[in-house]
Image (tube, rainbow, N blue to C red; front, side):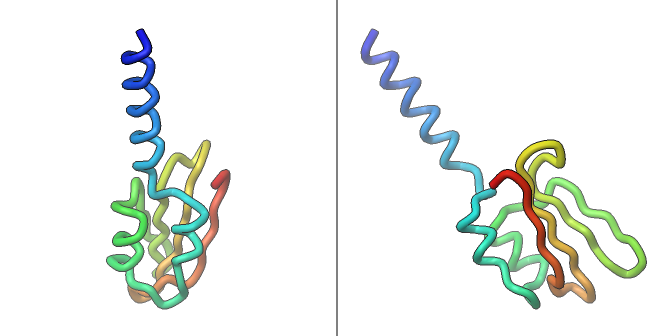
Length: 84
């Protein structure tokens, strides 16, 4: 019984540590970074869309925890986040 509880606790800890959507990673983002550099920090974006020459990408769930980055000419120009 104790062994199972430890196994479950360990798995939960491992899964919670897998998310790259953290305030620490958000603070690593800087204007001028390329999409590839941002993805090295956050992983692959869940969604990207182009509008009027800008590329808007989102990491995470728009209804929960997320980071959004706006790129112009493949350079990050704006950042926002929710629930980090």
